[in-house]
Image 1 (spheres, rainbow over the protein chains, first blue to last red):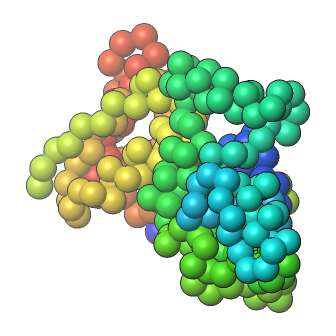
Image 2: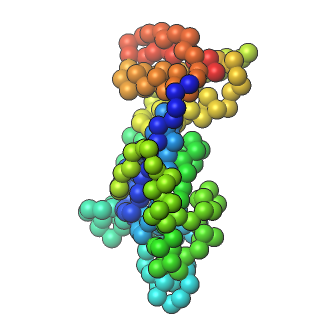
Length: 160
Length: 74
């Protein structure tokens, strides 16, 4: 058995299409025997929030307001041609029609094949979020840069 | 020792690899998984990644046109 190769994705974006790219790479790589880590920071955190819609999450008025504006996985916009969030729904429809996995299916697939999900300590601090605001599959260990570099050492690192 | 079947001919990347990986995780050691795949990336990479994970490729058979059967022993 060959030693496992490693891929670590820094998921900064909270855009629908970029999240599709991140979770496609993550699930596909893990399925072909890569060790895969995703480090969610800033907008990327929206993809793994427990509450999937627009709800007031976080601590403090501004954080809760931001949390509401950003929403969760149900509200992620397309990076271009978003048209008031109509485009992600159209894109999901087209993906289903062409038998391509939806964003939610890709997230589930990533979890099923053992992709490790980590959150960024600094972004959580700014947005007033705690580890309990995220889906239970997210690793309980909240990372800073040094720990992420340690975890991702020896593998490929990509920024989305 | 049992034989299991998986048809991923209608699937697209990355679900071709994901479904194979999940099915391989479900079966027991020495069980055999027969995967139906189309020509191209799945045909090239499923045998490769299965071998990397320590599984044995028992054979690859062209059934018809661009449909192949890969036999993997866990």
